[in-house]
Length: 178
Picture 1 (cartoon, rainbow, N blue to C red):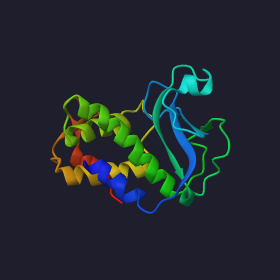
Picture 2: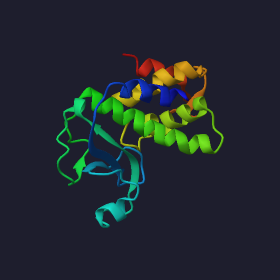
Picture 3: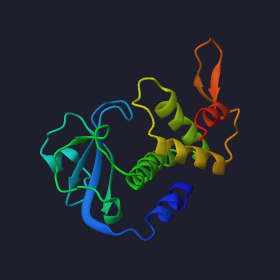
Picture 4: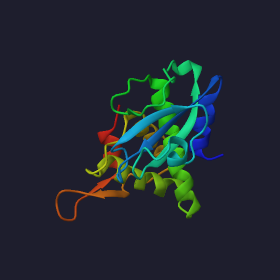
């Protein structure tokens, strides 16, 4: 079991599935830019087939069970912007681990190790000005996983504003310290 799966396993202990599913869909080509949430009675694996083509060229970020302990109103299926939705810390943590876990599967499949994947993820989701930003729950999770993976703090993450300057993993740790 990899580090992300272990965090997911620990987080899911004792939670009660409701039979509803929470699916986050990205409607933009950029990460975390135009996400919306849909609730349904089953896992969504193809947005257009499941919802009749109501989204242009969407990508599913994740589809996961809703748990009673989240206390979500999961009754509707109309899309809600992730930025407008008021959810608790448990929901944010579950969303973070399911989102990161789904992306990890892609990069693991092409032979990347966890450290390289996390550095890449932070570059695109935290530093890249075109992304919609990185939710705090994902920042915490990425930090924790980088520390566990032993990523070198001097590893270059993203080009800085001046010529040959680079943001490093150490900079990310400093900027995101609690």
